Image (cartoon, helix red, strand yellow):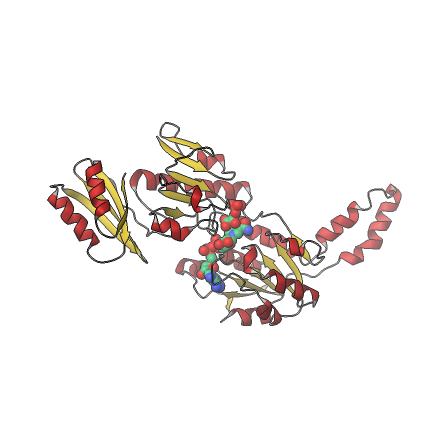
Length: 388
Ligand SMILES: NC(=O)C1=CN([C@@H]2O[C@H](COP(=O)(O)OP(=O)(O)OC[C@H]3O[C@@H](n4cnc5c(N)ncnc54)[C@H](O)[C@@H]3O)[C@@H](O)[C@H]2O)C=CC1
Ligand SMILES: O=C(O)C(=O)COP(=O)(O)O
């Protein structure tokens, strides 16, 4: 019986992927084979030795201690694109909320609850001028990060009649294919900020992006910028934002990562972290995360990992062993020499690497015993071995 420890609310369509005959799935398990989670901030102490893999049902993996996981041979997955449409639709809401007096107007109408029915229409007409706004069509939108979400947002904005400028120094080939050729390319963040009425952020929280929207960046922005942050709170330097809101450099800030510092600011609209909270996105992410875990636990295959190479080997016959090692010469040949010494025949093997990590799937003729697994683990530079 394999064990899956869950954190957060994972959609049941995903959990149902684990057959009850072979898996125990619960938020109470103490020695799991794998972890399935969403935004829970996972500390290294919550990852016992028994864990071989962690799947993030979502995009951002800044809640997982990836470097430590890699060192322990723990494969970390995410579910690229599975919630991109949900975020795109909330960004559309953010664009509208920052342009029209929707939230404030609703608040105003609620305040008229005690108005006499025959007076209501008159009061509404009297007050409405305070809530008029501007249209999106013809305005310039800057999209920072053109991955699964950013590309979707950029294409949507073109359909709304906006002019779209994108910035992504590391855009992937697939993302570039998804992007309309009408999206203009900014050479750098400063150039994008200086030209846009609206800017929406869709980058991961990594060292290069934390605080990238700082006082210097904001000082170069077009005055009255409407800034949308549905990426991560820490990408925007909140202290700098408070100043920019005060001096009018930023006209509106909409985010689903609320900050205490911005609570009382009338120019700020803060939502709960709702970007991926739709039935569809929650199901897509949970199913994709569960499928990836199952294929890894049962076959050693890796798809959509953020720290291990992509690898897949068809299962034919024999017994499967996988191992991870530092990506240096001679490790594979040393393991094969060891197998030869032990008179163990190899049926098939596949070896892939990514940065400092190499990973091998090995199908052998006889069932691996503890002695064999220990011998492979003892080969210099091997740091994880598993009989699958
Ligand atoms: N609010 C919410 O509920 C959600 C928020 N997110 C956040 O959005 C982020 C993006 O998600 P996806 O588009 O699915 O990821 P993705 O990996 O498809 O796209 C991220 C893009 O950012 C680009 N990038 C990285 N560093 C950059 C930099 N310094 N400047 C400009 N571009 C840079 C990458 O090249 C990549 O194209 C996630 O990492 C997560 O933090 C994701 C899903 C839901
Ligand atoms: O996928 C992401 O990066 C998200 O931010 C979504 O977070 P959630 O799964 O809703 O806690």
